[in-house]
Length: 145
Image (cartoon, rainbow, N blue to C red; front, top):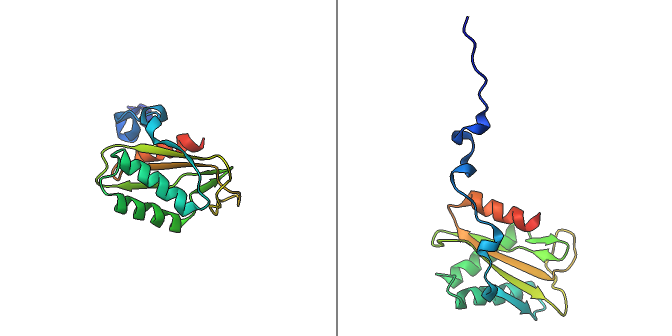
């Protein structure tokens, strides 16, 4: 009588889609030109400042569309993740790669309707290609870990 060999499905590429494409580290995405000190009092103002920085650095093919996507994401649930941080984010078809803009609120905190109800002092705005969901989730998890 023949017996079947036990196959570990996690060793097969079929069951491990992340193995096929090496995911980037956060340090590969960061750009010092996209780090700014904020002097805003409101969430919308902070978002607008970061969108303007991204646009000025040539990261946004369509500034208005990206801004709209960021604000639409905020209507789903606040991107204020707690502990003084917020991660507004959007994926779009016309992005070729990921980027992160960082806004640091040095003088006062921003009311963001965060999950822990605390105001925000650091904002990490992420954008990236719509079809790169696995990499997108990896970036989000690296930032919140």
